[in-house]
Amino acid sequence: VHHYRLMEPGKLPVTGTKYIEGSTFDQVSDKHGNRGALTYTFELKPTNGNKTTIDITPTSGYEAEFDFGTLEFQTAGTYQYTIIETPDSQNKHRVHRDKTVYTLTVTVDENLQITTDLKATLDGVTWDADEIVFLNVYPTVGDLTLTKKLVNAQSAPDGFTFHITTDNATYRDDVKNW
Image (tube, rainbow, N blue to C red; front, side, top):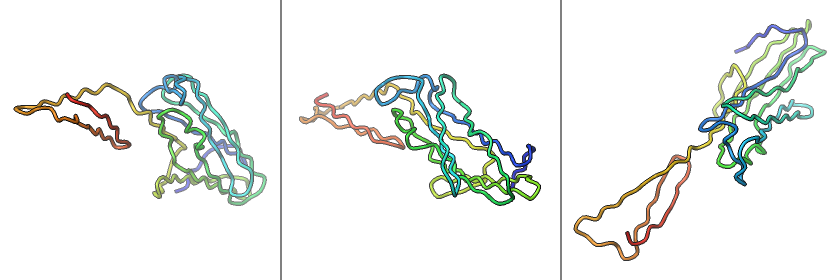
């Protein structure tokens, strides 16, 4: 699938959107417990050439835009770029970084008219994408109350062990002699 964009010949702006689910940017904390003003890093790397990295520091809300600027092409040809959120963005406490890899293929004709094709790949599955979007998940933390009732029985001498399992992790807490 090719996506056609109306733009100045030989020029292509490359932008994307960063979303966070489960919190707002100002409530996400780093591994030291500091909240807000955390930096997220994105990388645009051509097949042949040097990568460009940009940092954004959203201060509120659930979404933030990022902008690699405008790519300029002087000659006809096919150019390919990879776009990722870098692993450096993983320094956020409990934030699950989006590991989607976008591949942008740019075809420039002899009149410097541009045609683009954007693909996204995650966990070995590739699909056509209309835009560059990274979604990070900040798991919600809440209270959990458990009650164990013994009916016509005595407490176990060594207590009980509870295993609480979610999709991403297992939490253990040993409870003695209820």
